[in-house]
Length: 116
Image 1 (cartoon, rainbow, N blue to C red):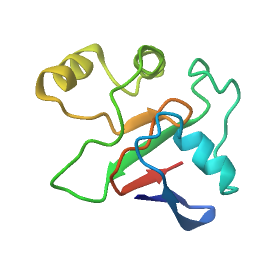
Image 2: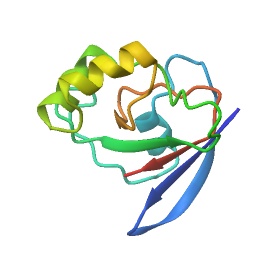
Image 3: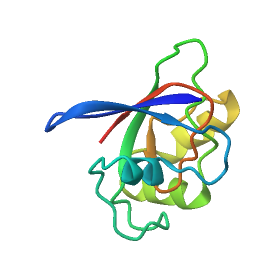
């Protein structure tokens, strides 16, 4: 089980349990099931509306979900959240991006903070 804390300055922080490794439990699905008001539109990783900032609660293991999908890479690059150089560095050093699309990020067995 993973603990996911959703944080937003306009709403009270909410921590929920997530079934890790299900390969279907995206952050967006988890947020919707728990009535957390993350903005979204297409639910397919193309519009960027569900952009969130994710950080690991455990500073030793900063995996923060599975690898970026190709759709995420493109949306993050176009939106200016990540440069091509940063993306290449993430691949080489296996460092996760703090910026993710809630509709694409699959929750792993780790405690994370999601700022939306």
